[in-house]
Image (cartoon, rainbow, N blue to C red; front, side, top):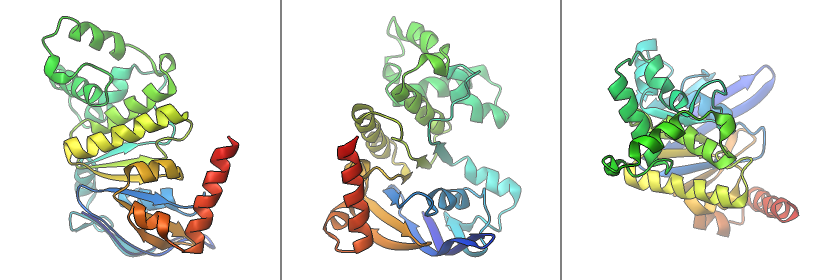
Length: 263
C-alpha cells in the first residue's frame, strides 16, 4: 500500500502540492488525472523519493520514504518499476541492454540470470513467444533477433512495450506509468491499455498511472483521483467519474473529448 499524507511541495513562490491525502490500495490500478502543470509528475517523484516534501509524509508498505536511509530507499525502489513518458530508451543500447540495465546497475553480472529476466520480461509484454515455449525451435532465434535491435529499429508501440518490459525486470510490486499512451495512435494506445490491465491481473501488481488520456482512464482504472490547485478535487471509480457533477471534472472531460474529436 502507498499512502500520501498531507503532502505539500513548493518551488519558490509556486505552491504545487497543497495538502494531498491519497491511498493507493494494493493490487489496484489508480489513475491520477489533471491539467498540465497541476503536479502529477511531482507527486510521482515524491513517492519514489526523487523529491522531498516540504510537509507531510509518503508511506510505502507502512514505511516513511522521507526518513529512510539511502540503503533502505534503494531497497524500496527495487520494488518499483517505472515507465517513463516517451519510453526513454537509451538509443545507443540494444533492446536487451535497455531491459536489463537496472539489474546490471545494481550489480548483477550472472549472464544466465540477466538472460532469464530479459526473456521473461519481453515475453510478458508480448514481444517474445510465451516463456513456457522455451523449447520451441524458433525461441532462441526470436530472442536473438529482437534483443539485438536498437530503439531506432522499433515502432512507437514496440518502444512502449520495451519500456514496460524494463519496468518488469526484478518482479516489482509496483509499476508507475508516466503518460504511457502519449504519442501513440488509438490502436497502439488501446494495446498499451490492455497490457497494463493484463499485467495488473496476471502479476498482481499495484499500478499508478499518470495520464490525461480519458479513454485510458475509463479502460483501465479501478480508482481515479484528480488534481487541481494542489489538492485532490475528485476521488472515486471510473463510473463515479463519468457521473460526477463536479464542475472541474466535467470541464476537464469535456475538453478532452473536444480535443480528441479535433485530432
